[in-house]
Image 1 (cartoon, rainbow, N blue to C red):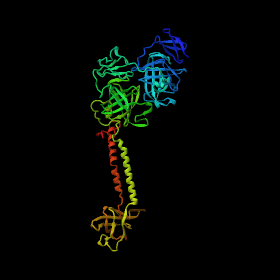
Image 2 (cartoon, one colour):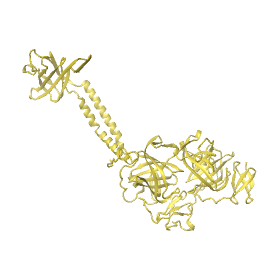
Image 3 (cartoon, rainbow, N blue to C red):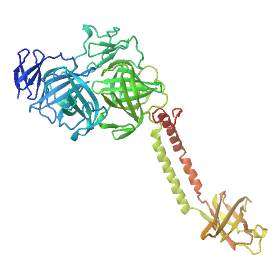
Image 4 (cartoon, helix red, strand yellow):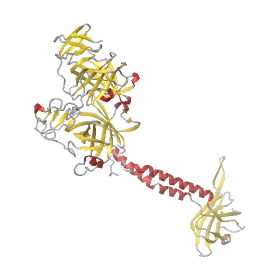
Length: 640
């Protein structure tokens, strides 16, 4: 039920429209009036509202899906010293309420949820996870102490203007956001859970079409108060800091361009001018801000440059350049990612830890949506899964997650069309994809297919191929000496009808002995001679009660290529003196597949895939040589 009373300061009528409202800012005198049971307490006059580029105003009505119609009943302005943001109180017809947080042009609908056991304010840590019960596990992305600087309408708490208000912001699975409200103490007082919404989602009617433009300084043209240079503000509704492009001085865009830091010159210049427009990822971006950042490792400074891009509908993105390598960077929801010292995951993809360090802001130019300052330092961690890199940046009070996608320099030059050529790339970027990655898979698939074909052909020919062209058994006469002319024999003539290799198979029933045959295949027409030799050796016995054997009664020899024709064999056998074999058999087959030939063919097939693999390993070795986990110290080489 509405509660009506008189302002204790000016006597004007004030109405608490929402039964749960405990604080009312008098529309007439600006005093903060608190309900104390049936009494009212005057907390004094509140400061004027800070001019922010909000499209909203008190009294607007709307309806969010799943909730009853609401009215904007209150406006709370908070500041943590480097920026101000608005919290709007949504009052529902049934007497309940919710918050609509507005910051950097984004809105988050936050409804009150049951308060589970959560850490005290001093115990909560940025980057840690907090279990919010049925809503899931959330990541702490910000933990600060803000201050109630101003307000309007009515608010659901009894807090004097100027009071400290502690809070922790979290991000959860599926794009959820949460805020733990600690009031001015250590114990949590409430938790609010919701998600990012648009004014269309809220069904708000009557909101302003555009925010009020940034006001000119003292009624004059907007210019740098330090050097007088003209300033063109490209995101006036969200800009908090401006670094003058003429003198480099840092200005506070929320306080009539108050000079925060005096500079006399711009230290580093971007490769294309502020205000340049370019199309990347299907969006027309405007380049509005530039900074150079660096990390120092073992007294060596490693610098890179970041280009802030803006689109009124998509918000802010970054274009990052380091040693001629470019990446497009966009923020991601911390609740949908996980990161540890060893690795990270996001969207079902795993990332390997690449490096950690402390990134410092060295130079700034243009405008920024947060209170940037030279010397700002964050603890950063980078994780790679080329062409993507997941990064976290953390301060004592805030953490952010981002995802970078590698771009070819030509893509950037085509988008923004700057003068000259892109700077030459040096080394390998952490998320640079291997140039031959697209052909690696097809090459290996082709090689595996060809190798499988070779194996099938070898098996098929081994089973069905090979034609027997000669077979005979030769007896050794008694009292003939090994190697004597009497032991030599000639075969009957036989035909080889196709050119190819010849397999010679020797078989002899030897036991604790050997037979060696020195043979020659003689072409009766040309007289050409192909020589070969083969030996069978077989020994066996028992030693210390154990049977043993070595060798066998079969042996093979090959002649690499024999033309078709009519042939005879000349055979000169030798054997162990005193142990002549009774006989030996010789079989010749033509066009017999050889295993080493198949293996050689397979090896040749895999030369190119293995070369590609070696180049990839060399490429990766270069990449990781710049990381916290080098494959080998001092590795170097040229870009493959």
